[in-house]
Image (cartoon, rainbow, N blue to C red; front, side, top):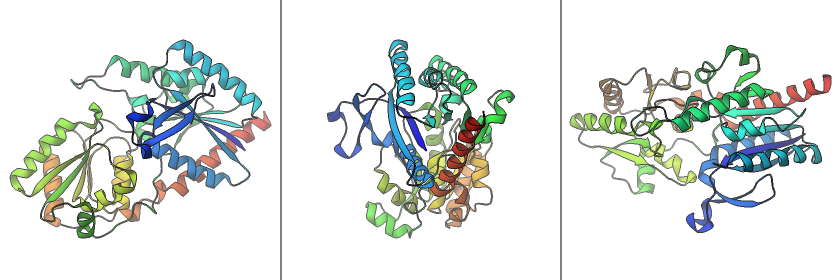
Length: 356
């Protein structure tokens, strides 16, 4: 099987990024660009798991689409995609991330099955600094929906994302979240993790990942931790922005809890990574958080955004001073499991194409 993966991302000048974060990638016109490897970590891991599931007789080709291109450049990319699919005898085109690029590419694959993975904000929208849905978010949502109509199969991260679609699309919608590497994210003693990171052993750390996106609800997270600190002076909020992927397991193992009060999510990877390390999680009940935290001790998905609900949940974790049993619950989101699900979807689509 010949699979073409399309990834959309921001282009960087090489000296803008450290060497270990530079990810060279070709676009559909054959031009090479530099992307940020951190932006594609989860995509690349999913692709690696998929390649393993497909086997040695299959090949995955990756092409990048530059973010924020104008309509004419996207049209050129779409024309190039049409020729690429024909010349390379591509069996499946799978695009990760929706928006205008997906809208244009979805028209260019002809009879070759086109799979679209919507990852979160591309369907749920983005927010401005006032917490209101932005016009860019509106454009992102509606072009994603148009691409979803054209797609032969639609991959979503959670059932809640599915509820945002027209029921007419349900029969071709598949819930397959991005997976995590359970061999990388493993539990270790908190004291050892703190020592390796150089953290204060006397402090109780609350982990919060802040990528600058209003969706992550950073002001709310800061308010929650401030309230917690009134009861637990040793608590410190770690607002994490960019961490080398290989160090992330140490962060989860050294932290007392992960705080995730997002306004919306698809299927948050940090939540799943924390579970694999037995790090307790306090999350808003968005995306698949309720499903992932069901049966997980010292962890909770909270409906709504009452500060005191989050404060109480974190206080309970700190008082218990125990790790979660999250690792017992991660099998459905491991790479191997996700890779096989995508492999089965591809096989189904190629079989349908052969029959028709």
